[in-house]
Each structure stands twice: as C-alpha cells, then as structure tokens.
Length: 219
Ligand code: DX5
Ligand code: ZN
Image (cartoon, rainbow, N blue to C red; front, top):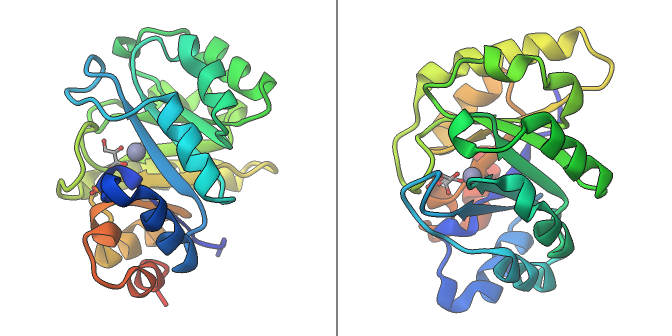
C-alpha cells in the first residue's frame, strides 16, 4: 500500500487567522495544503486567487496543491506557478473552456506537477486518454463549489479504474479524492485505491486536527 497523503483544504479554515490555521495543520501532520480556486463561473462560488496563494506559501513549506475550478485555466497558470504551487489541477469538462492537453503541458513546462479532475457526472473516459500525461487524478466526491457536502460513494468506480490503470504503469499517478472526506469515507476511498485525501470540514471544524489527520490515515 502507498503512503497516505493528507491534504487539508483551507477553504474550511478560519481566514481571519489563516497563518495560525496553516501552522496548526502542519504541526498536526498534514502533508500538502489544498487550495480551492473558484471563479463564480465554472462553479457557483468565489474563493480566492493567486495573491492569496502567495500569502499561504509564506506560511508553510508544505507543497501547495492548487485545484482550479475556473474557466480558462491556462490563462491563469503562470500566476499560480509564480504564487508557489507545487501541483496544479484543472478540470476536464468542456465548460472549463480550455484546451486540456495544452494546459497540462503548460503546467508541466512551468515545473509543476500536473493534475486533472472530473465532476461527479463526468465519465471516467474523458480523463482516460490524458492519464499518461498527469501526475495526479483528482476524483471529485462532491459537486465542486462548496465545502461540507456529503461524500458520493458512487465515484469510487473511477478511483478503482484509476488504480487498475496504475497497475499497468511504471509511473504511478496519485489518486486523490476531494469532498466529504471523513475518517469513514477516507477508509472507503483508500480501500478502493486512493492515496491522497483532501479534507476541509472534517479537519478545520474539529477540535483536534492531529487526531483527525491520524484517523484519516487509518491510524
Ligand atoms: C469542493 C472543493 C473541496 C472542498 C472540500 O469544491 O474542491 O476541496 O473544500 O471540502 P469538504 O472536505 O468540507 O467536503
Ligand atoms: Zn478541491
């Protein structure tokens, strides 16, 4: 079994003391910091942009895992690279209005890890042909746009298909799940083959970040 990576989503953090929140999850054993970027077009919510990510970068040495839920991702890639992203994940749906392979090449050429993601109703087939060209497949286990929604177990089929794909490859991609991840749904995701867990509410709305992060890992 691969090492489990826990990536707290700061969308659920208290922004009025963001630095503290980041230091606390880092001390609690987080591996990556997940940054959710929403533009009010691709998803029905607005979060934060590159300048905010640059501020997050100053607070931690953990890798920043940037999830772009925006239209025209390619146009913004350079700004998120400069802000200090380690990995940049983009959506595959036509509504995200970019040329997926071109954006992935742009991200890779800029020195970042590449990620591709798909909404719950988007079939796995849409990402399949790109898997050889990404480092991360992010399987959305809720509809993107808001934290605090219930986990959709029906998305585990995509996790299993990605895990099967990995078996035939030398270069393994990270299989990341995002949305409604709690210790219970983390276990389900790991059993199906995921190795990266994004969790917002279950960590930041808890009293003991270290305890939840250990539980997410199944410890
Ligand atoms: C949803 C975001 C998620 C979200 C997860 O649009 O991509 O990263 O912050 O939040 P929870 O863990 O609260 O479901
Ligand atoms: Zn996310």
